[in-house]
Length: 430
Ligand SMILES: C[S@@+](CC[C@H](N)C(=O)[O-])C[C@H]1O[C@@H](n2cnc3c(N)ncnc32)[C@H](O)[C@@H]1O
Image (tube, rainbow, N blue to C red; front, side, top):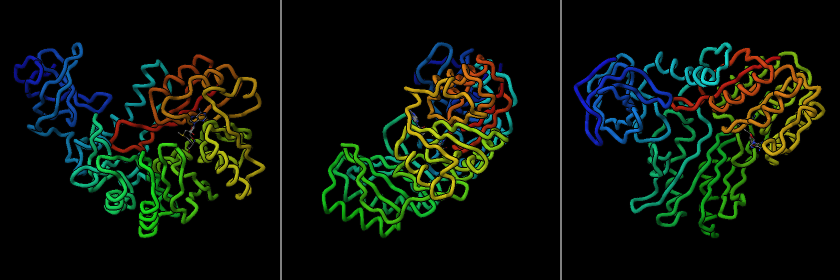
Protein backbone atom coordinates (compact mmCIF):
# COMPACT_ATOMS: atom_id res chain seq x y z
CA UNK A 1 0.00 0.00 0.00
CA UNK A 2 1.47 3.34 -1.02
CA UNK A 3 1.37 5.97 1.72
CA UNK A 4 1.35 9.72 1.34
CA UNK A 5 1.73 12.51 3.86
CA UNK A 6 0.30 11.31 7.17
CA UNK A 7 -3.35 12.29 6.95
CA UNK A 8 -6.52 11.18 8.60
CA UNK A 9 -9.53 11.70 6.42
CA UNK A 10 -11.77 14.33 7.94
CA UNK A 11 -14.52 16.33 6.36
CA UNK A 12 -13.27 19.21 4.14
CA UNK A 13 -9.65 18.59 5.17
CA UNK A 14 -7.08 18.83 2.39
CA UNK A 15 -4.59 16.01 1.89
CA UNK A 16 -1.97 15.10 -0.65
CA UNK A 17 -1.94 11.60 -2.07
CA UNK A 18 -0.62 9.47 -4.89
CA UNK A 19 -3.16 7.84 -7.19
CA UNK A 20 -2.74 4.08 -7.47
CA UNK A 21 -5.46 2.98 -9.88
CA UNK A 22 -8.72 4.00 -11.54
CA UNK A 23 -12.23 3.29 -10.27
CA UNK A 24 -15.13 2.28 -12.52
CA UNK A 25 -16.41 5.87 -12.59
CA UNK A 26 -13.04 7.09 -13.87
CA UNK A 27 -11.94 8.57 -10.54
CA UNK A 28 -8.35 8.07 -9.42
CA UNK A 29 -8.09 5.94 -6.30
CA UNK A 30 -5.41 6.44 -3.68
CA UNK A 31 -4.92 5.54 -0.04
CA UNK A 32 -4.53 7.66 3.05
CA UNK A 33 -4.52 6.29 6.60
CA UNK A 34 -5.99 3.00 5.36
CA UNK A 35 -8.91 4.75 3.70
CA UNK A 36 -9.57 4.53 -0.01
CA UNK A 37 -9.90 8.03 -1.45
CA UNK A 38 -11.62 8.59 -4.81
CA UNK A 39 -10.44 11.73 -6.61
CA UNK A 40 -11.81 12.84 -9.97
CA UNK A 41 -9.51 14.05 -12.81
CA UNK A 42 -6.53 12.16 -11.40
CA UNK A 43 -4.57 9.43 -13.22
CA UNK A 44 -2.56 6.56 -11.75
CA UNK A 45 0.87 7.90 -10.72
CA UNK A 46 -0.36 11.48 -10.19
CA UNK A 47 0.34 13.23 -6.92
CA UNK A 48 -2.71 15.35 -6.17
CA UNK A 49 -4.11 17.59 -3.48
CA UNK A 50 -7.69 16.68 -2.63
CA UNK A 51 -10.32 18.02 -0.26
CA UNK A 52 -12.04 15.24 1.60
CA UNK A 53 -15.76 14.96 1.21
CA UNK A 54 -18.24 12.74 2.97
CA UNK A 55 -17.17 9.27 4.07
CA UNK A 56 -18.97 6.18 2.85
CA UNK A 57 -17.64 3.30 4.95
CA UNK A 58 -13.94 2.90 4.14
CA UNK A 59 -14.37 4.97 0.99
CA UNK A 60 -13.98 8.74 0.86
CA UNK A 61 -14.85 11.08 -1.96
CA UNK A 62 -12.11 13.60 -2.55
CA UNK A 63 -12.61 16.87 -4.37
CA UNK A 64 -9.75 17.53 -6.77
CA UNK A 65 -7.87 20.65 -5.64
CA UNK A 66 -4.56 20.60 -7.48
CA UNK A 67 -2.30 18.40 -9.55
CA UNK A 68 0.92 18.53 -7.52
CA UNK A 69 2.93 16.34 -9.87
CA UNK A 70 1.69 14.65 -13.01
CA UNK A 71 2.43 10.96 -13.34
CA UNK A 72 3.26 9.14 -16.59
CA UNK A 73 -0.43 8.40 -17.29
CA UNK A 74 -1.54 12.02 -17.18
CA UNK A 75 -2.02 14.22 -20.22
CA UNK A 76 -3.34 17.71 -20.69
CA UNK A 77 -7.08 17.49 -21.34
CA UNK A 78 -7.78 18.86 -24.84
CA UNK A 79 -11.02 20.65 -23.90
CA UNK A 80 -11.14 24.04 -22.11
CA UNK A 81 -14.33 22.93 -20.29
CA UNK A 82 -12.92 19.66 -18.95
CA UNK A 83 -13.53 19.38 -15.22
CA UNK A 84 -16.67 21.40 -14.60
CA UNK A 85 -18.45 20.04 -17.71
CA UNK A 86 -20.40 16.88 -17.00
CA UNK A 87 -19.97 15.58 -20.57
CA UNK A 88 -16.49 14.04 -20.15
CA UNK A 89 -14.90 12.45 -17.09
CA UNK A 90 -11.51 11.14 -18.26
CA UNK A 91 -9.88 13.43 -20.83
CA UNK A 92 -6.84 13.59 -18.56
CA UNK A 93 -5.88 9.94 -19.11
CA UNK A 94 -3.03 9.11 -21.52
CA UNK A 95 -3.89 6.65 -24.26
CA UNK A 96 -2.88 3.22 -22.97
CA UNK A 97 -4.38 3.73 -19.53
CA UNK A 98 -7.53 5.22 -21.01
CA UNK A 99 -7.98 2.34 -23.45
CA UNK A 100 -7.38 -0.32 -20.79
CA UNK A 101 -9.77 1.39 -18.37
CA UNK A 102 -12.51 1.72 -21.00
CA UNK A 103 -12.24 -1.91 -22.10
CA UNK A 104 -12.10 -2.82 -18.41
CA UNK A 105 -15.62 -1.44 -17.91
CA UNK A 106 -16.91 -4.35 -19.99
CA UNK A 107 -14.42 -6.93 -18.66
CA UNK A 108 -15.32 -6.06 -15.05
CA UNK A 109 -19.09 -5.93 -15.64
CA UNK A 110 -19.00 -9.41 -17.18
CA UNK A 111 -16.70 -10.77 -14.51
CA UNK A 112 -18.93 -9.39 -11.71
CA UNK A 113 -21.70 -11.55 -13.19
CA UNK A 114 -19.35 -14.53 -13.49
CA UNK A 115 -19.57 -14.52 -17.30
CA UNK A 116 -16.62 -16.07 -19.13
CA UNK A 117 -15.80 -15.35 -22.76
CA UNK A 118 -13.39 -13.48 -24.97
CA UNK A 119 -13.44 -9.68 -24.74
CA UNK A 120 -11.98 -8.05 -27.84
CA UNK A 121 -9.84 -4.93 -28.11
CA UNK A 122 -11.54 -1.55 -27.72
CA UNK A 123 -12.82 -0.24 -31.05
CA UNK A 124 -12.01 3.45 -31.04
CA UNK A 125 -13.87 6.37 -32.59
CA UNK A 126 -12.27 9.75 -33.32
CA UNK A 127 -12.71 13.02 -31.42
CA UNK A 128 -15.27 15.48 -32.83
CA UNK A 129 -17.38 12.65 -34.27
CA UNK A 130 -20.50 12.69 -32.06
CA UNK A 131 -23.40 13.61 -34.33
CA UNK A 132 -26.08 13.69 -31.67
CA UNK A 133 -26.22 15.69 -28.45
CA UNK A 134 -28.71 16.44 -25.71
CA UNK A 135 -28.02 19.99 -24.56
CA UNK A 136 -29.58 22.29 -22.00
CA UNK A 137 -30.22 26.05 -22.24
CA UNK A 138 -31.18 28.62 -19.63
CA UNK A 139 -31.71 32.35 -19.93
CA UNK A 140 -30.18 34.21 -17.01
CA UNK A 141 -29.36 37.86 -16.31
CA UNK A 142 -26.25 37.82 -18.52
CA UNK A 143 -27.78 35.97 -21.46
CA UNK A 144 -28.37 32.37 -22.48
CA UNK A 145 -26.19 29.57 -21.16
CA UNK A 146 -26.11 26.68 -23.61
CA UNK A 147 -24.24 23.39 -23.25
CA UNK A 148 -24.02 20.29 -21.11
CA UNK A 149 -24.90 20.23 -17.42
CA UNK A 150 -22.12 20.60 -14.91
CA UNK A 151 -21.00 17.34 -13.33
CA UNK A 152 -23.54 16.38 -10.63
CA UNK A 153 -25.49 19.64 -10.95
CA UNK A 154 -28.24 21.25 -12.98
CA UNK A 155 -26.00 24.26 -13.72
CA UNK A 156 -25.14 24.62 -17.38
CA UNK A 157 -21.64 24.87 -18.80
CA UNK A 158 -21.76 27.54 -21.50
CA UNK A 159 -19.92 25.65 -24.25
CA UNK A 160 -17.53 27.58 -26.45
CA UNK A 161 -16.01 24.44 -27.96
CA UNK A 162 -16.44 20.71 -27.57
CA UNK A 163 -13.84 18.15 -28.62
CA UNK A 164 -16.43 15.38 -28.75
CA UNK A 165 -19.16 16.89 -30.93
CA UNK A 166 -19.06 17.21 -34.70
CA UNK A 167 -17.87 20.74 -35.62
CA UNK A 168 -21.17 21.40 -37.44
CA UNK A 169 -22.94 21.09 -34.07
CA UNK A 170 -20.40 23.22 -32.21
CA UNK A 171 -20.69 25.91 -34.91
CA UNK A 172 -24.44 26.09 -34.30
CA UNK A 173 -24.05 27.02 -30.64
CA UNK A 174 -23.45 30.84 -30.92
CA UNK A 175 -26.38 31.52 -33.29
CA UNK A 176 -28.58 29.14 -31.29
CA UNK A 177 -27.69 30.99 -28.10
CA UNK A 178 -28.61 34.28 -29.80
CA UNK A 179 -32.00 33.11 -31.04
CA UNK A 180 -32.89 31.49 -27.71
CA UNK A 181 -32.20 34.85 -26.01
CA UNK A 182 -35.26 36.20 -27.82
CA UNK A 183 -37.40 33.14 -27.22
CA UNK A 184 -36.88 31.94 -23.66
CA UNK A 185 -38.39 33.95 -20.81
CA UNK A 186 -36.05 35.30 -18.10
CA UNK A 187 -34.90 32.28 -16.01
CA UNK A 188 -36.65 30.03 -18.51
CA UNK A 189 -34.95 26.91 -19.79
CA UNK A 190 -35.11 24.43 -22.65
CA UNK A 191 -33.75 20.99 -23.48
CA UNK A 192 -32.42 20.54 -26.97
CA UNK A 193 -31.72 17.49 -29.09
CA UNK A 194 -29.34 18.22 -31.94
CA UNK A 195 -28.74 15.51 -34.53
CA UNK A 196 -26.53 15.91 -37.57
CA UNK A 197 -28.10 13.98 -40.44
CA UNK A 198 -26.93 13.66 -44.03
CA UNK A 199 -29.13 16.52 -45.22
CA UNK A 200 -28.45 18.84 -42.31
CA UNK A 201 -29.18 19.34 -38.63
CA UNK A 202 -32.39 18.19 -36.98
CA UNK A 203 -33.08 20.37 -33.93
CA UNK A 204 -35.79 19.70 -31.35
CA UNK A 205 -36.38 22.34 -28.66
CA UNK A 206 -38.33 21.18 -25.62
CA UNK A 207 -39.59 24.07 -23.48
CA UNK A 208 -42.55 24.93 -21.30
CA UNK A 209 -43.31 28.37 -22.67
CA UNK A 210 -45.84 28.84 -25.43
CA UNK A 211 -44.61 29.65 -28.90
CA UNK A 212 -46.26 32.80 -30.22
CA UNK A 213 -46.18 33.95 -33.83
CA UNK A 214 -43.20 36.30 -33.40
CA UNK A 215 -41.13 33.54 -31.76
CA UNK A 216 -42.12 31.08 -34.44
CA UNK A 217 -40.99 33.51 -37.15
CA UNK A 218 -37.68 34.09 -35.38
CA UNK A 219 -37.04 30.35 -35.13
CA UNK A 220 -38.05 29.79 -38.76
CA UNK A 221 -35.63 32.55 -39.86
CA UNK A 222 -32.92 30.96 -37.73
CA UNK A 223 -33.56 27.60 -39.44
CA UNK A 224 -33.09 29.23 -42.84
CA UNK A 225 -30.01 31.24 -41.80
CA UNK A 226 -28.35 28.13 -40.34
CA UNK A 227 -29.58 25.90 -43.16
CA UNK A 228 -31.13 23.40 -40.73
CA UNK A 229 -32.93 20.39 -42.15
CA UNK A 230 -35.69 20.63 -39.52
CA UNK A 231 -36.56 22.55 -36.40
CA UNK A 232 -39.34 21.31 -34.10
CA UNK A 233 -40.73 22.80 -30.91
CA UNK A 234 -42.07 20.48 -28.24
CA UNK A 235 -44.16 22.31 -25.64
CA UNK A 236 -45.61 21.23 -22.32
CA UNK A 237 -48.27 19.17 -24.16
CA UNK A 238 -45.49 16.95 -25.63
CA UNK A 239 -46.72 17.69 -29.13
CA UNK A 240 -44.00 18.00 -31.78
CA UNK A 241 -44.65 21.28 -33.60
CA UNK A 242 -42.72 21.38 -36.90
CA UNK A 243 -41.55 25.01 -37.00
CA UNK A 244 -39.34 24.49 -40.04
CA UNK A 245 -39.24 21.45 -42.25
CA UNK A 246 -36.78 22.34 -44.99
CA UNK A 247 -35.47 18.89 -45.85
CA UNK A 248 -36.57 15.39 -44.92
CA UNK A 249 -34.02 14.61 -42.13
CA UNK A 250 -32.32 11.74 -43.87
CA UNK A 251 -29.59 9.22 -43.14
CA UNK A 252 -28.61 6.13 -45.12
CA UNK A 253 -28.37 2.67 -43.64
CA UNK A 254 -26.61 0.32 -46.07
CA UNK A 255 -27.15 2.93 -48.78
CA UNK A 256 -30.92 3.09 -48.19
CA UNK A 257 -32.26 6.55 -47.28
CA UNK A 258 -34.26 6.63 -44.04
CA UNK A 259 -36.17 9.65 -42.73
CA UNK A 260 -35.30 9.79 -39.03
CA UNK A 261 -38.28 11.11 -37.01
CA UNK A 262 -37.57 14.50 -35.33
CA UNK A 263 -35.32 13.84 -32.33
CA UNK A 264 -35.42 10.11 -33.12
CA UNK A 265 -32.73 7.71 -32.00
CA UNK A 266 -29.52 7.47 -34.00
CA UNK A 267 -26.24 5.81 -32.95
CA UNK A 268 -23.99 8.51 -31.49
CA UNK A 269 -21.45 8.63 -34.32
CA UNK A 270 -21.21 7.41 -37.90
CA UNK A 271 -17.96 5.64 -36.98
CA UNK A 272 -19.62 3.92 -34.00
CA UNK A 273 -22.57 2.92 -36.14
CA UNK A 274 -20.25 1.41 -38.78
CA UNK A 275 -18.36 -0.56 -36.12
CA UNK A 276 -21.57 -1.82 -34.48
CA UNK A 277 -23.13 -2.77 -37.82
CA UNK A 278 -19.97 -4.67 -38.80
CA UNK A 279 -19.96 -6.55 -35.49
CA UNK A 280 -23.68 -7.36 -35.75
CA UNK A 281 -23.22 -8.58 -39.33
CA UNK A 282 -20.27 -10.76 -38.32
CA UNK A 283 -22.21 -11.97 -35.30
CA UNK A 284 -25.27 -13.20 -37.22
CA UNK A 285 -23.06 -14.74 -39.92
CA UNK A 286 -25.11 -16.74 -42.40
CA UNK A 287 -28.40 -16.61 -40.43
CA UNK A 288 -31.32 -16.40 -42.83
CA UNK A 289 -34.18 -15.60 -40.47
CA UNK A 290 -33.39 -12.86 -37.98
CA UNK A 291 -35.36 -10.96 -35.34
CA UNK A 292 -34.03 -7.43 -34.71
CA UNK A 293 -35.51 -6.35 -31.38
CA UNK A 294 -35.40 -2.67 -30.34
CA UNK A 295 -34.63 -2.01 -34.01
CA UNK A 296 -35.16 1.78 -34.06
CA UNK A 297 -35.35 3.10 -37.63
CA UNK A 298 -33.39 0.15 -38.98
CA UNK A 299 -29.68 0.74 -38.28
CA UNK A 300 -29.14 -3.04 -38.28
CA UNK A 301 -32.37 -4.32 -39.86
CA UNK A 302 -31.75 -2.67 -43.24
CA UNK A 303 -28.18 -4.00 -43.68
CA UNK A 304 -29.16 -7.44 -42.36
CA UNK A 305 -32.08 -7.61 -44.80
CA UNK A 306 -29.52 -7.56 -47.62
CA UNK A 307 -29.00 -11.27 -46.96
CA UNK A 308 -31.79 -12.43 -44.65
CA UNK A 309 -35.45 -12.20 -43.77
CA UNK A 310 -35.75 -9.76 -40.85
CA UNK A 311 -38.56 -9.23 -38.34
CA UNK A 312 -37.83 -5.79 -36.89
CA UNK A 313 -39.61 -4.66 -33.71
CA UNK A 314 -39.55 -1.40 -31.77
CA UNK A 315 -41.88 0.41 -29.37
CA UNK A 316 -41.72 3.74 -31.24
CA UNK A 317 -44.38 3.98 -33.91
CA UNK A 318 -42.49 6.77 -35.73
CA UNK A 319 -39.32 4.65 -35.96
CA UNK A 320 -41.25 1.65 -37.27
CA UNK A 321 -43.02 3.80 -39.86
CA UNK A 322 -39.68 5.26 -40.96
CA UNK A 323 -38.16 1.80 -41.30
CA UNK A 324 -41.14 0.32 -43.16
CA UNK A 325 -41.18 3.25 -45.62
CA UNK A 326 -37.41 3.08 -46.17
CA UNK A 327 -37.48 -0.70 -46.65
CA UNK A 328 -40.24 -0.37 -49.25
CA UNK A 329 -38.47 2.42 -51.15
CA UNK A 330 -35.12 0.67 -50.91
CA UNK A 331 -36.42 -2.56 -52.41
CA UNK A 332 -36.23 -4.46 -49.11
CA UNK A 333 -39.93 -4.32 -48.27
CA UNK A 334 -40.32 -8.04 -48.87
CA UNK A 335 -37.37 -8.78 -46.62
CA UNK A 336 -38.40 -6.74 -43.57
CA UNK A 337 -41.51 -7.16 -41.44
CA UNK A 338 -41.52 -4.03 -39.23
CA UNK A 339 -43.76 -4.17 -36.18
CA UNK A 340 -44.53 -1.85 -33.32
CA UNK A 341 -44.57 -3.58 -29.97
CA UNK A 342 -43.70 -2.72 -26.38
CA UNK A 343 -41.01 -5.30 -25.70
CA UNK A 344 -40.84 -4.44 -21.99
CA UNK A 345 -44.49 -5.23 -21.42
CA UNK A 346 -44.70 -7.88 -24.07
CA UNK A 347 -41.37 -9.48 -24.88
CA UNK A 348 -41.29 -11.94 -27.76
CA UNK A 349 -42.06 -15.30 -26.17
CA UNK A 350 -40.10 -18.52 -26.61
CA UNK A 351 -42.92 -19.77 -28.84
CA UNK A 352 -42.82 -16.63 -31.00
CA UNK A 353 -39.03 -16.89 -31.21
CA UNK A 354 -39.29 -20.37 -32.71
CA UNK A 355 -37.83 -20.57 -36.22
CA UNK A 356 -35.42 -17.61 -35.94
CA UNK A 357 -31.77 -18.49 -36.72
CA UNK A 358 -30.57 -15.41 -34.86
CA UNK A 359 -31.88 -12.62 -32.64
CA UNK A 360 -30.27 -9.18 -32.43
CA UNK A 361 -31.34 -7.02 -29.50
CA UNK A 362 -30.32 -3.47 -28.72
CA UNK A 363 -32.41 -2.19 -25.80
CA UNK A 364 -32.18 1.17 -23.96
CA UNK A 365 -29.72 1.56 -21.04
CA UNK A 366 -31.87 -0.46 -18.63
CA UNK A 367 -31.35 -3.55 -20.77
CA UNK A 368 -34.03 -6.12 -21.56
CA UNK A 369 -34.32 -8.49 -18.62
CA UNK A 370 -37.69 -9.98 -19.60
CA UNK A 371 -36.71 -10.37 -23.24
CA UNK A 372 -33.47 -12.06 -22.16
CA UNK A 373 -35.51 -14.45 -20.02
CA UNK A 374 -37.73 -15.33 -22.98
CA UNK A 375 -34.61 -15.90 -25.10
CA UNK A 376 -33.13 -18.09 -22.36
CA UNK A 377 -36.26 -20.26 -22.59
CA UNK A 378 -36.14 -20.37 -26.40
CA UNK A 379 -34.33 -22.59 -28.90
CA UNK A 380 -32.76 -19.69 -30.86
CA UNK A 381 -29.19 -20.83 -31.59
CA UNK A 382 -27.58 -17.37 -31.83
CA UNK A 383 -28.12 -14.09 -29.98
CA UNK A 384 -26.28 -10.84 -30.71
CA UNK A 385 -26.71 -8.29 -27.93
CA UNK A 386 -25.89 -4.62 -28.55
CA UNK A 387 -25.79 -2.41 -25.48
CA UNK A 388 -24.77 1.04 -24.27
CA UNK A 389 -24.54 -0.15 -20.67
CA UNK A 390 -22.06 -2.87 -19.65
CA UNK A 391 -23.90 -3.49 -16.35
CA UNK A 392 -27.29 -4.26 -17.88
CA UNK A 393 -25.60 -6.16 -20.70
CA UNK A 394 -23.81 -8.34 -18.12
CA UNK A 395 -27.04 -8.89 -16.19
CA UNK A 396 -28.83 -9.97 -19.40
CA UNK A 397 -25.80 -12.10 -20.31
CA UNK A 398 -26.13 -13.91 -16.98
CA UNK A 399 -29.75 -14.74 -17.84
CA UNK A 400 -28.74 -16.03 -21.28
CA UNK A 401 -25.86 -18.10 -19.90
CA UNK A 402 -28.12 -19.58 -17.21
CA UNK A 403 -30.45 -20.51 -20.05
CA UNK A 404 -27.73 -22.48 -21.84
CA UNK A 405 -25.95 -19.92 -24.02
CA UNK A 406 -22.23 -19.29 -23.89
CA UNK A 407 -20.63 -15.94 -24.56
CA UNK A 408 -18.53 -16.38 -27.68
CA UNK A 409 -17.06 -12.90 -27.74
CA UNK A 410 -17.81 -9.37 -26.64
CA UNK A 411 -16.40 -6.27 -28.29
CA UNK A 412 -16.33 -2.84 -26.61
CA UNK A 413 -16.93 0.14 -28.92
CA UNK A 414 -15.88 3.55 -27.63
CA UNK A 415 -18.50 5.78 -29.19
CA UNK A 416 -18.91 7.88 -26.03
CA UNK A 417 -15.35 9.15 -25.97
CA UNK A 418 -13.83 10.21 -22.62
CA UNK A 419 -17.02 9.45 -20.73
CA UNK A 420 -17.91 6.54 -18.45
CA UNK A 421 -20.33 5.23 -21.09
CA UNK A 422 -19.45 2.34 -23.33
CA UNK A 423 -21.16 0.55 -26.19
CA UNK A 424 -20.62 -3.18 -26.75
CA UNK A 425 -21.67 -6.06 -28.97
CA UNK A 426 -21.79 -9.57 -27.48
CA UNK A 427 -22.36 -12.80 -29.38
CA UNK A 428 -23.99 -15.76 -27.60
CA UNK A 429 -24.47 -19.24 -28.98
CA UNK A 430 -26.13 -22.41 -27.85
C1 LIG B 1 -30.49 1.93 -28.12
S1 LIG B 1 -31.85 2.23 -29.18
C2 LIG B 1 -31.43 1.15 -30.49
C3 LIG B 1 -32.11 1.39 -31.80
C4 LIG B 1 -31.52 0.69 -33.01
N1 LIG B 1 -31.12 -0.66 -32.75
C5 LIG B 1 -30.37 1.47 -33.58
O1 LIG B 1 -29.22 1.01 -33.49
O2 LIG B 1 -30.59 2.55 -34.14
C6 LIG B 1 -33.10 1.48 -28.29
C7 LIG B 1 -34.43 1.36 -29.00
O3 LIG B 1 -35.35 0.77 -28.07
C8 LIG B 1 -36.62 1.29 -28.34
N2 LIG B 1 -37.46 1.05 -27.16
C9 LIG B 1 -37.42 1.69 -25.97
N3 LIG B 1 -38.33 1.16 -25.13
C10 LIG B 1 -38.94 0.16 -25.81
C11 LIG B 1 -39.95 -0.75 -25.49
N4 LIG B 1 -40.52 -0.75 -24.28
N5 LIG B 1 -40.33 -1.65 -26.41
C12 LIG B 1 -39.76 -1.67 -27.62
N6 LIG B 1 -38.80 -0.82 -28.00
C13 LIG B 1 -38.40 0.09 -27.10
C14 LIG B 1 -36.38 2.74 -28.66
O4 LIG B 1 -37.45 3.26 -29.42
C15 LIG B 1 -35.05 2.66 -29.44
O5 LIG B 1 -35.30 2.60 -30.82
